[in-house]
Image 1 (cartoon, rainbow, N blue to C red):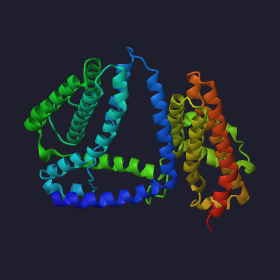
Image 2: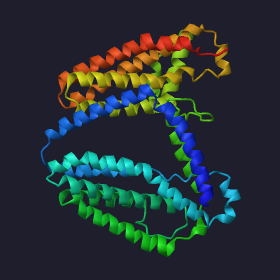
Image 3: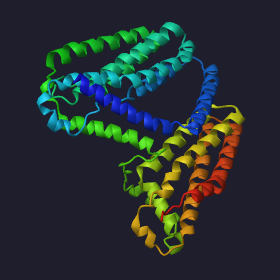
Image 4: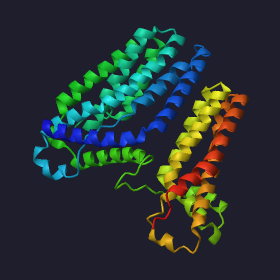
Length: 406
């Protein structure tokens, strides 16, 4: 099992590095650095204005508890395992133990960053930043370790108490974090360590049965995890064999009458319906507009807000580009009695509308806090980039690659 895990891990890492090189290209890394710097600057300005209050501790505990949900069990299992490794079901537990340890690496880095970002808030709460930050990070890592154990035994027929599940774990984590922020994070760490040890003694040592593995559940969970990962990669490059999910979303049909059902608007209607139904583009647009509004709400420097808003609009526009080629392999689209120029014009118009609406919604963040000047400049910067992207950069990109290949 050790050799099997090492072989699969090397193959998995090789595939991930291939896609990560495409995702984190020069442009995207530059945008991330600027956004990260702007976020740090806005965060520092916000922390300076904070005063100890009753809501700060529960709010910080809630954010840190939400970070615990990041990271799923990476079993790297394959559908054929249910057949060829069935006689080795008991021994396969050692393979999954190695997978659990590997799955802890990335969440540990995220939680460590979350604990480091909480250090300025610990100063506001009159908690020693050195000891408080270290124990807070240890508290989060212990709870994440326990979370991955729970994700593992979900695929086994383990007889365990009803409270041994992920939801009670997050409730306990929130309570321990809140208590630690009111007293000292060391108290919360003691609670987390006690829960972890109790779980290992009561559940793993007393009830764990390696022969009760549910192979179908394990394979379905791994397939779902990899599907989410590849859908993220698909925003930046083509992932072979990945099909975009489609949802009916009947409640969004109220936007369809915005486009008239006439031959002159054939492609406009098709692109709008595709944007509303495909899980990739609508979800991305909504998530980025929420994150962007929150980031801009933390920025109080007008030129920085304009720069960040413009970068966000460019990022959204760049991620919408694959939608232009979503119908390039649809044979029946070649029979539409409409000129090819209508397709390019329809996508350009849809992109312009989406970017302009995105730019306007971004200003909701600073406006909610009464930062009118910041909102004005952020909106101006975002609208400028939206116009340049839709009417200058987008036509240039569409001329380089035909929407309907010959």
